[in-house]
Length: 368
Image (cartoon, rainbow, N blue to C red; front, top):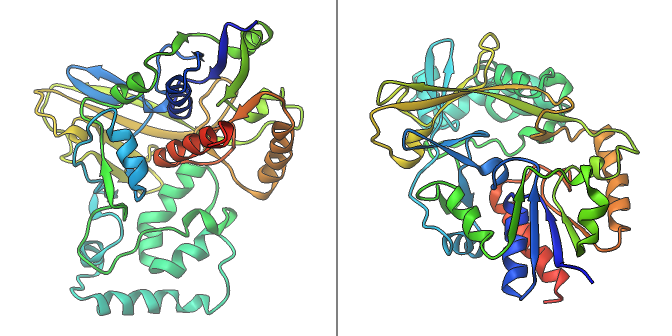
């Protein structure tokens, strides 16, 4: 006899959606997480009335109306629009690359003038297929934008030269010949009013949640309590790194509370030169149009993922993808274990993709 129908390892978005859907179907869930809070990387810490995105900026955006309606059924989302700025050696440029950016760089005022400059700058590449990220970037936006707004930021983010990174990383780079600073093309976009914790708390309602619990320290006993396991942690860790450890990039966050009401006037400012050690500064109150007398900023420092650090971005090069495919074969052969989420699938997911993936796994699992 099992006490629970499902042991869900990880109280993030994937685990929360699965727990909610299983509970709705009359199942009993135990949700565990090694951290001391729910929500995974979407967790918000309240500091002087400001919802601080503790693990970096999280902006929900999607074209999937079903997913948008789903998350809004738990908490109302505001109208926040992501319009980041780039700071290159003290000069500010609008992102994504659009007519405002082109005017700031070259003083051009028409789309054709901007196209002409970009076409001249990428002509040296010819018609050859881009072989690395540098060639891909130049083929999309030309040499000026690549050098000022892409190269330094990207090399800090990945800890590798752009010439050594695959081109697909930047293939979806937004480039617009309109005066539009909205970073995302998606129809729906916003932040939960009151922070992401409201979403995950609603998803986990009805489930038993235990925090500060490491699945691997008491694996046999925890697994024995449930008929099935839903695992959202690192896939290589689940198999005790038997095929080797998969590579990730990690982030270090430096949070600072300031006795002023407005530090930078925008939620996200990227620092795109190579000399500045961090990639961006986030000012959290602007995600929710805050009017608090103080403010909280966060500097993000990318670094290699080491044992004990949080894995954020999978390094999806050929070598790691080859190992990941073998791990996924092993996962598919596991009885009574469902693997899901960015770590268990070794895939970079936006939040709406995590929700959609979890809902799909639920439908398949329950034969609906």
